[in-house]
Length: 546
Image (cartoon, rainbow, N blue to C red; front, top):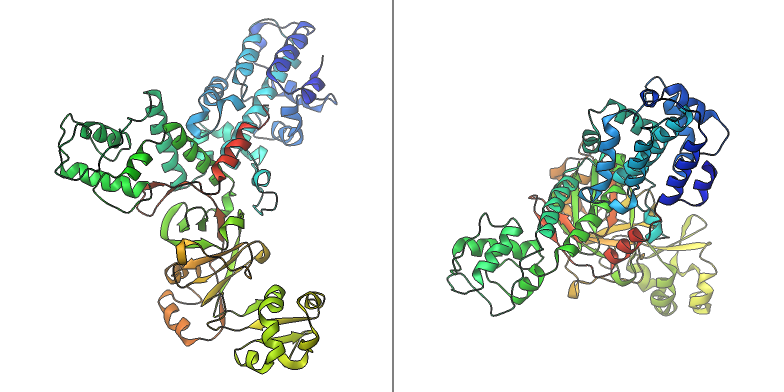
């Protein structure tokens, strides 16, 4: 058996058997020599023999580090080897899965060096640690699964770590723990979620949430034998400071109940309702899943995209404007036709156009405008619609509409286009965002809350989102050196079409989060209406083990 075997059968037993086979045929050396040297590692990397897959997939970059001026032995004879296996064993505190990391194999590999071994085998163990450390570091910073696994048509910029940078930063860190602190996503939202996750695991270790018996509604001033359990449950949610055996529903408890209503997505009220009881009785395992999945989705976003971000949470009809992970502004955003809007993307916001012109889709021309064009093209033109053919504007009645049909119009979509300037019929509203990949995402103005909280215009892209009452967030979007924030309402009121550049490095990110952090730093739990969490959890559980 040799290192090539590992490339085809990546499991813990293969590692162990391979280690035994190598050690059995190795030139002997004493335990005092088992710390290895850089020359041994460099020699092993320079050999043409295939190394374990965990090393092979980053072999060039690993070689670059060990041949660099910053190179050093990272694991052999170092405390960080034990710290790494401990971090892997307790990976759930990072929102990761301990079962994804072969810490037991690494521990056994270290123990094997206590006997007589050869220099190549010592170097082999060093590289084994390095390979698995890089997998762990990549999962910590860039995520365990690619968004493309869940959404084949999604555009999410690929996120990955730079091997030499990660190893250099590890070499310069005081410990593995300090490396993790510095290397994980550096924003306030991620840190708050991680802290809440630790609390949830403590609750799980103590048997889970206190169960509340369904019963009658309770209000402040009431007396009930259910009150002590309710108080204990809100202490577990960190919404109440201390528990008590008192059965009196006092004002302090009513205030905490109001906070619980807000946390779980209900109208704020001091009354205990059946809906709130059901939310409080959701098992702690589900809450852990929600927080862990939220942390995973944050990892998908590359570092350079996280400084300024308009984040749209499509499952909850929410948007957040974040600076370095801190929520600056929040509001409502609605996915266009949410039952078929599977957008999961990150792209640059380049500009904002006030009173934008709508390029009318040919489906709309054929199904909605064609009967009117056949009847009275002048009337349609009076509403603002105009025609461009081969780059030049021509009268709307220049085409023989009466001889056309919806199917025949589709054949000529490369020859002419119909446009509609700003008007009441223009579905883009008072402003629209210009994005680097417009075909992947469309953001527009939505003046009113849609009926039944669901918006659907089949003639807008299925990747479109309406921003409700978005003037406040525009103040954070538009580059203030070009146009002052306080002038936005006045400029909109003029009615002319004009485009202003967005702030540099500003990203629009669309994803689903069933738990998120709001402006006041409050963690809120939502729902999973489109089974996004279920899809992600299944993908994570199905990831092949190293």
